[in-house]
Image 1 (cartoon, helix red, strand yellow):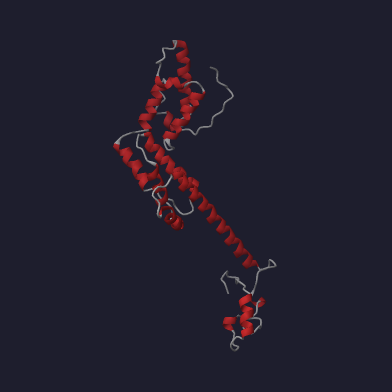
Image 2 (cartoon, rainbow, N blue to C red; image 1 turned 90 degrees about the vertical axis):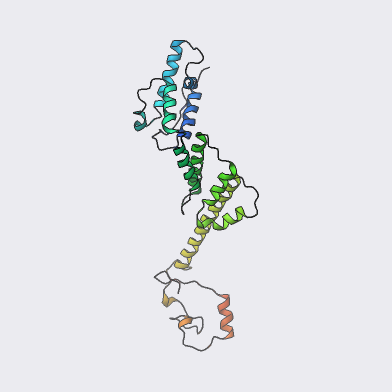
Length: 257
């Protein structure tokens, strides 16, 4: 089988900080696309020595090129793809109790800060779950869904109640979709609010409104407001006029007058 040399793959170099489980899957996919995946298991197919040596060298080189320098120095003396792969798994995919506890703690204590994008928060959650699964710790869909809901910040408090009230079961995909929709709605409301405030601050003709430009609703005199008016009680006619005309005015200091 021949493989096209025109293929191009962009993979982030593993530096010990990014998700090893995801990086491992991506590198393995590259090896599969290049026809080199057999090298990860050693020469079990009894391939001819020359052909095996070439395949193993190519696979080892491909893996090394996906490592950052600080990681590469720890494995530079390993000459086979199988040894290199197993060494990386031993260093960065530890299945010991301490690593399990650390990842479980990260999962259960996950909180989303106000202002964080939902897409970034979902990525963080999925990365933790992926690392847990890579060390054979399974997180079922229900627990993952509840963790997502409980990790939301106070601005989503009403949505949290809606999602959990009277529900016997929830799917992660369904909840994630609703949260993304809520984020869009909140951003739309913020945009509308900002536009309304700008219009009020600028006035109908685009000019800033000053105190000398408005009149009292009570006596119809200019230069002061109804709350500062010294005239008598407002008439029924004036009350009707006031009820049908509403204006929001901001002074130079930005406060409603």
